[in-house]
Each structure stands twice: as C-alpha cells, then as structure tokens.
Amino acid sequence: GSSRALRCRYSFVTGFIGTAGGSPMVLHSRKKKKQNKKTKSSCVFGKGHYPGGSGRFRDQDQVHDDMKMPDLFKPGKLPMDEDLPGMGQFYCIACARFFKDAEVLKGHERSKLHKKKLKKAKEEPHTQRDAEAAIGLSTE
Image 1 (cartoon, one colour):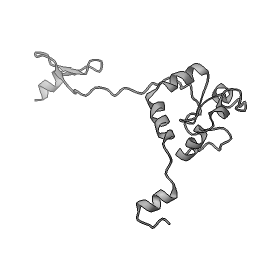
Image 2 (cartoon, one colour; image 1 turned 90 degrees about the horizontal axis):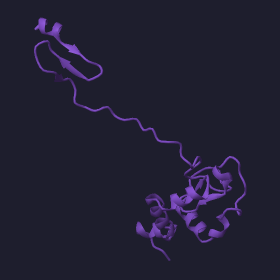
Image 3 (cartoon, helix red, strand yellow; image 1 turned 120 degrees about the horizontal axis):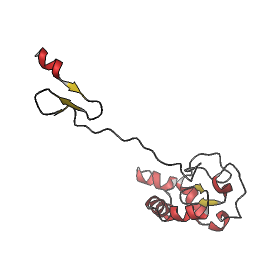
Image 4 (tube, helix red, strand yellow; image 1 turned 180 degrees about the vertical axis):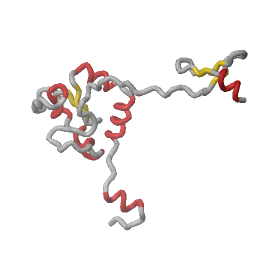
C-alpha cells in the first residue's frame, strides 16, 4: 500500500509511472490534442466581403446575379482599396472573397470549396413563389 506509493515515480516527460522493482505502467493513453497552427491566410477579409458592400455575407441570389456579369469583377475594373488584400483587385465572384494576387486566386479556383460554391452559384436561386408553393399556398 503506502510503501509502494513511496517507491512510484511519475515522469512528466514520458508519462509513465515506474516502480522500483517492476516495469513501467502507462498512466494515461490519450494523446495530446494538437493545436491548430494554421498559417496566416492570404484572404484577410475572406468570406462575405464584396465590392461596395457593408461586410455582410453575399446571398446566393446576389452571387448568381454577379455571375452574369463577370467582366465587372476583373482586375483593373474594381476600385482600388488598400484595406483589402491585393488592393481589392483579385476577387472570386462565386465565393465573394478577395485575394492578395492572381496566383493565390488561381490556386483557390482549383480548390474543392470553390468548385462546390461555383456549382451552387450557377443554380437558379429559390424565389418567394417557390417557397409558397412548397408549403401549399396557391400560386396564381
């Protein structure tokens, strides 16, 4: 009992308990949770910010309308804004995100997230009429 407690040692480095006459026993088997040490993103204002907006997220119908006029969002056509990454010139319409340069934007366009959002943005957005029809209200 108490004599064994005096002979036991705990190693903070290895996490084992060792006894004077026996083999080491594992005190705990859970691994330490790793902290997320993500590097700084190249898209500082990221999701939701868009040209001339208040900083709220873009709705699907707004993104769908923007997809009809892609020439308005090309570099050189957008107003310069020093608070945005890349002076506000490299913009992904489908994701409503700014990027620091064309290379980062190209990398983003190859990502799975962008492809999902692009597919969703190309779909026709739901309307109030669709919502009323779904709950059974008459649509005349």
